Image (cartoon, rainbow, N blue to C red):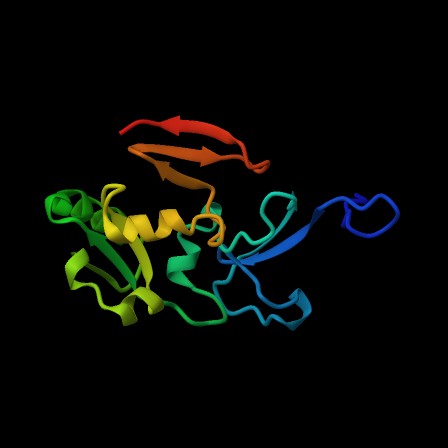
Length: 168
């Protein structure tokens, strides 16, 4: 329907098409990516003036956990604070019901550096937790649209402005 990149031509605008596979933004062009059985591709046209790199999208769920990217599926680790074991267990049951494979649940102190780098991590913890703090300090670089300010969770819109604020 004539929707095309706004970054070419005389009136340059930061709008373009982005290609996602199973919820992950592709790091190669669509012509170079070979789809695997079960893959879901999505083309998203959006303004990238605030955030160019959006590594994953929520509507790719649970494809990212089931099919991964490039044919490789990472294990899923639900990591929780000691007093949040019950919430982590409920989340494990939910994901298992959605047939997410290879789920493990453990405390923050049991998580290894290798697992941090090679797993789909789901953190169940408060803003003061060290891993949550690490994400919070790097929210812009990681392409996140939410961060904690004190005990409040701030959700950012595509323009970089606070769209919602959730208290503790």
